[in-house]
Amino acid sequence: MERWVLLRKGADFEAISRKYGISRRLAALIRNREIIGDEAVDAYLNGSLTDFYDGMLMKDMDRAVELLLEKLREHKRIRIIGDYDIDGVNATYILLEGLASLGADADSDIPDRVQDGYGLNRMLIERAYKAGVDTIITCDNGIAAAAEIAYGKSLGMSVIVTDHHEVPYEEKDGERHYILPPADAVVDPKREDCGYPFKGLCGAAVAYKLVEALHEASGLDVEDMDYLIENVAIATVGDVMDLTGENRVFVKEGLAMLKRTANPGLRALINCTGINREALSAYHIGFILGPCLNASGRLDTAKRALALLETRESKEADILAGDLKALNDNRKDLTEQAVEEAVKLVEETSIHDDRVLVIYLPDCHESLAGIVAGKVRERFYRPVFVLTNAKDGVKGSGRSIEAYSMYEELTRCRHLFTKYGGHPLAAGVSLSLENVEEFRRLLNENCTLGEEELTEKVVIDMELPFSAVTEEFIRELSLLEPFGKGNTKPVFAGREIVFRDVRIIGKNRNVLKAKVCDRTGVWLEGLYFGDVNRMEHTLMERRDTLSVTFYPGVNEYMGRRSLQIIITHYK
Image (tube, rainbow, N blue to C red; front, side, top):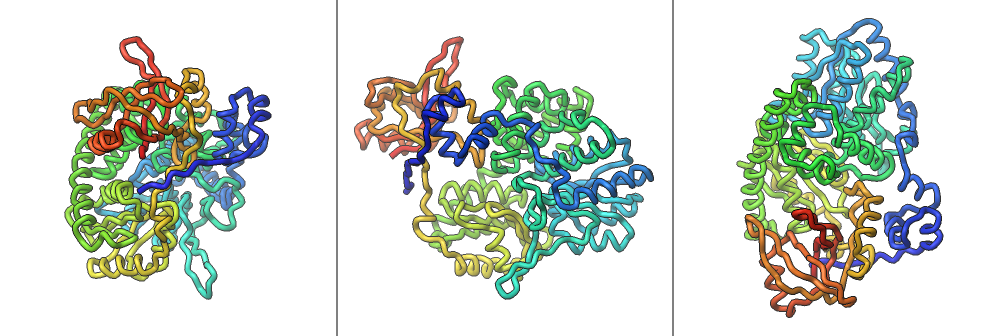
């Protein structure tokens, strides 16, 4: 069951409307996003790259820059060690490009998800040492690799960490003691002693800030590196960062660049997946391009996604893009099977009564655990961990709900893991098989979530009469883009909506289409993409009248444009 909550935030909407030349409705939507005061509203509507904070404000950025400039002068070998997901791959590419433009002798290595696991390990360090590498730069990892970095230092290597993950800590007498790795420089805005004002950057954005700082310190034009903003945008959306502050500007500017990208690999992937480049949005990164880039790290090696970004040959780009799309199609099929199995376990076993779901799927490919956990969370609205068999015991990924900080809860039972890490809303663990049941027991014993927190909340921005759904209003809504986590699409609602000519359409019969009318007497086309059979049954029971939440849009077909609404929830 869902709780529908209507936001009622006050402000002088008339004054905001006049000052910024927007409608009162748009002013109210901006206020609903907690954008308060002239400075914040102006930054939200007109924010640009010139408003960014100086990367040198990050703790240890000066040390990282100084050390790298010294290594460049001495022609030392540098190796970038990234991660196998979309953020890590783009961060690796950004550092490779940035260092290459400074004439560095730099290469990269990305761990294999199955063979190496997440982040730095001794094998990667030994590989670098044997190759004559002098300096390792991590990106999108490293903050939790204290032992591995100490090993690299013992071999005489310099190590620079660039990361954005939470800093590990131990609790003693109710106080947190943060554990930083013994690197030469640790650049991570999540450091407690880091003065950088915006803490929500992804790993690729931190890498970009380092490249910017290096170019500035070298007396070069920082704008020469602007083309890498499209990679920061891809990583920000793909790693599901909040689209607020600098992230929103990175994505807004990056999307504009992506529409006319000069990168052969990205061009090939956009073409291969059939995206209309002019209409490209954050949605396409999150649900089409991103999964293709992630698929290589899941089912093969992330080095293929990196190769796509690096290639300068259009023929090779076409081949690599086609391979990534095929891998992602395969990943979708495997995911569907695993989700079915997970749902069955929740519905038919004692797991159903748990507030935190720990689902053991021994045969699921370990790389799919996070995706499966996310889909199960959507279905049951509870924190979910999916565990699978791995090379050394059991590995798993978790996806959480707003009221439950996964990273903190894992820290409370850290003694069960051989490795763990992550964010409040997503985390990863490695543990032995005999600890699985104890893990499930402890998480649920420690869990304080109540009924209200375990009930999905549908937050409604405003009731919107169908008479207000105009092309002009839809155009104005685009000022709020890009949409994503932290800056979600507005949710509009209508009561007593009448449905007529209800049909289930689509190749897979997964879309409900109808004519809909509200109390203003205006008829629009309505589409619903959820459980269409259940909705059809509900309509029959309710005599074709429902309350709905929706988002308005324009449907273009055969040169004709018509207004429509996409229905998201109903009751």
